[in-house]
Length: 95
Image 1 (cartoon, rainbow, N blue to C red):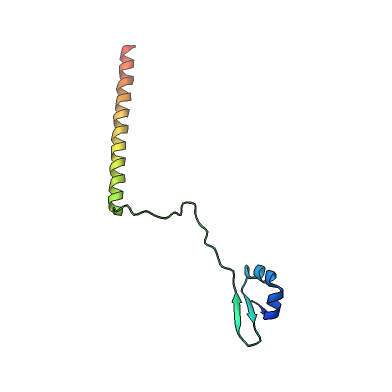
Image 2: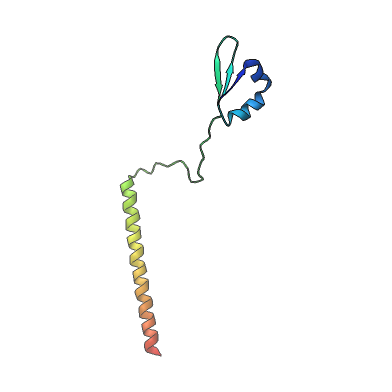
């Protein structure tokens, strides 16, 4: 930690701010009071870090809805697959 007098700190404020990004800087006044200059760490934010909304439904209800949706999607895929299979079989019979 670097230590500066109040007078030095006033004269070299720009330098102190740069130093404070790497380490704490201490400033001492004649009357004995001591201050620490420390850079504030900013939290890295994700672009996906957004505020939530109140939907009025529970997490359990959301999970149940997603499961139901996936179940219906799988049933639709199975039906389409069967229809394609039947269509290909019919084409083979017509040859």
